[in-house]
Amino acid sequence: MRRRGWLIYASDREAAIRGIREASLASPGSLTACFSPVEIDGIGDFFRVRSTIHPPADLAACRVAYPGVDWQVHGDLPRPPASLTLPSPRDGEGDVEVLSLLGRFPTWVECRGARQRDFLAAAGITHGWTHARDYDGVSAEIERRRPRVVLNEVWTVSLADHALLARRWPAVQFVALSHAVPGWIATERPAEHYAFLTLARERPNCHYGTVMPADRVVAPRGTRIVSLPNFATMPEGLPAREDGPPTVSLIARDTECKQWGAAVAAVAVAARSIPDLHVVVGSPKLRGGIVPHLRYLDELGVPHVSLDWSTWGGYIDRVARSVDCHLTATIAESFCLIPLEHCLLGRPVAGTPAVEWLPPKWQRNPQDPAALAGCLVSHFREYDAAAGKARAIAERVAAKNHRQLLASLRSLIDA
Image 1 (tube, rainbow, N blue to C red):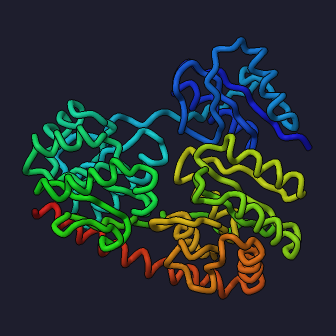
Image 2 (image 1 turned 45 degrees about the vertical axis):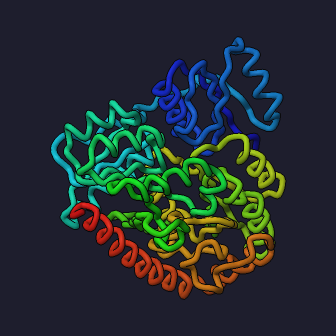
Image 3 (image 1 turned 90 degrees about the vertical axis):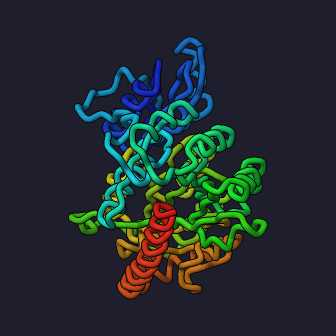
């Protein structure tokens, strides 16, 4: 059966999000192509094309690029009532102890905003967030919220503005928080990485933050490095695993270090030993780099569906209902939160040494698809034992992370 594709014409981000959401609800697993004269990247499960070409030519281009897809224009879609809107510019008003500077990607706001706020509130720490990302905007938020600590998450605010803000607000602790492996971010964004380290050495209210242990960041003596690990919690009332075929998830960003090709190859090998193996595929941007892997799964006859990435709650609900195991072929991870969330649900993981907290037997060579497949096959053969082990490991890891995160934040608040 040919895959459905919806062609969406959007004048702005909100229209793009609405169209993508409607397409996802109308045809789960369908492709969506957005043509827009404005930048709309990073807002859902789709691949994005910027174009001012006349629509018929755009439709023709999609049919040439993806000949195995039945393309239709978004206007032909049924219009379900549900829609996704952009997050508000901040979480609210009132003083907070910790203020996060976040981008506007909805799931990011849900996790690092609302869920982080609730997690910290349970520990007695007040937290808020804002999408302000320049000097004037952040200054206004600091005046409004009066935080003791500002977390510049994934360096949302530029180095120059970060430095100016730290000078203007000497009583506030500013943390340039990287969520990447130090060696990786030093390779990808070297100028910022080294400059933030210098700032954390020269200005007394500046810190370099990492989600890894602080000693993983190599810097001259006197550099203030703080470890702020990822938190991981599960909501109550998640559904039980529904009846269905054996299913593995491939869920990751579309970046080189995630090695999608190796993961798909491992699934292809595992499918030879696991009858009727299905795949749930998820990525914030199901576009160029991911789509060829989906085509290859089609060629192999491995059934797959695409995960709706519009909300964290929807993602974790889908994993709870329909996924048995997770597989990752990643080669560089600061922590790897998605495997931990699977393990907290009792879903075992076939991974690599980059996911350091996994048991050694679950860490396989990322360059050897057969080795990764062997781990996955082993999980399915001894599933109950693997599921129990996954949950126990994840609970220990999460508890350790939570202790470190809260201790670091309290130290910064008291500084």
